[in-house]
Each structure stands twice: as C-alpha cells, then as structure tokens.
Image 1: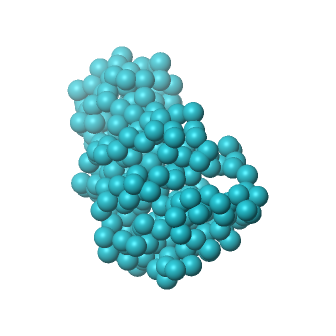
Image 2: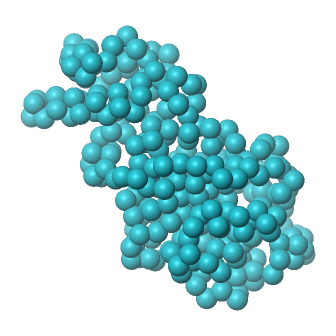
Amino acid sequence: MTTSEIALLLQARGFRFSKTLGQNFLMDEEVLDNIVQAADVQGKNVLEIGAGAGCLTRPLARTASKVLAVEIASQLVPVLETVLQPYKNVRILQADALRLDIGGLCAEAFGGPFSVCANLPYGITTPILTALFRLEEVESICVLLQKEAVERVLAAPGGKEYGPLAILRRQLFEAEVPLRVPPHCFLPEPHVDSAVLCLRRKRTMEAGELAAFERLLQGCFAMRRKTLLNNLSQLRPRQEAQSILEAADIDPRARAEALSLEDFLRLHRQWQKNSTALV
C-alpha cells in the first residue's frame, strides 16, 4: 500500500487529524526510505513511537527483523492493521508511550538490544528522548523532529537551548542530522520545519550513576538565571555546595548554561565523592 492509498484510506474512514496529538503524517515515499536508510536497522529490532497510519512502519518492516509499533490513537489501530497486514514481523500496540515501561516492554518483545526509529510527535520529544537515553539496550535512535527540537538536543554551552537533554546526549550518543524535511512532505502540513536526528550510542552509564547525574543536572538548571551556587543550595547546605563547586574547580557564581560536559562530569564526581564522605 502506498502513502497515497493510505491517505485515501484515512479519508474513507473519516479520520480527523489531532493537533493535540501532533498528528502530521510523513507521506513522501523517498523521504521515508531515506529515513530508514539513515537509521541503519537492517536485520535489527526496532521500536517505533507514534506509528500513525503506518507510513514509516512499512519500510521499517521491510528492513528490520522485528518492529514494535506503538500508537496512542485507538481509531488508527484498524488503519495500521490494514496497512501492515502483509508484514508478519510487526506488532501493533495501542498505548500512550509516556505511560509505558519501555524497557520492560522491549525486553519482552525483543529480548535484547534494539533501535528506535520514529516520526516522533513533537509534543513528547523531551520526555521520550530522556526515557530512551536511560535504557542501555537502546543502540541507536533515528527520529524525525521539529527543527527547534533538534537544535535543543544538539545545543552547545552558552545557548538558551542548552540544558540537561543536550548534556545527556553529549555524554551518551554521537549525533548527526542527515536530512531536512520541508512541511509539504506531511499531511497535514505543519507550520514548522523538520529534520531527522540520528543518535548512535557511544557509551553507557550505570543506571544509578546516570540517575544521580540527571538529578544534579536538573538541580543546576532549576532556575536558569540563578547562579550554580544558588541553585545547588536547594540540594545541599550553601557552604557545602560552595565547597563542592570550588573543589571541582567551578566558579560558584557561574550559571549552568556556561558549563561544558566535562565541567558537569567533574562536578558530578565531586558531588558523589562528597555524598560518600557523608555516609
């Protein structure tokens, strides 16, 4: 079934696109094939979040070993079943990805490492990527995002978009943007430009350490215009927070957006060392 036929199927079923759910379906066959090629999922297990009408699921199913396609809208499940009927390696799950235990679900579905490829609904970009970053089993992530969301994930120190998500990405994944996608490739056309972001895992952090690193980052960025000392004083006594910053060779008067990944890792080690000393 082609994307043109999928569009006709949606029309015949009286489907109405939801802005709330970020339903803008990518309909350009060439772009869809290019995304799957960039994702490099030949023979791999793939999680797709926001399967929509199955436009991306089809080329994924032709390439991957197994595909778990998650879609929140119950009215799209019959559409997905029709579109994906020829593919026996696809499992459709009607669920809200934000409420899923993705790690447990994929362990049951795949029993090992997996990749993520999706036209990710723009409104859930940050929480979904953060959840995926936490899973060691995720080998790679290739997602179509709003251009501003891509910039947020790739943000460098000093910029207004720089924050915990960008820092976690720098620690865990290599990144590239192989493709830009204009609005006319979607149905309906969004009012924003989009781009494909591909992430390849370069290292892992033990789950407990990663959780502690995340908490520290959230504390540092709690109030962006406040100094590190003021923000971290909400987590530890002020004098202790200042001593830790100074021991990590970080100016207590600096703001979080000015620190590099290396600065945050150094601060994290000192923060953890101080916690151990207090036990």
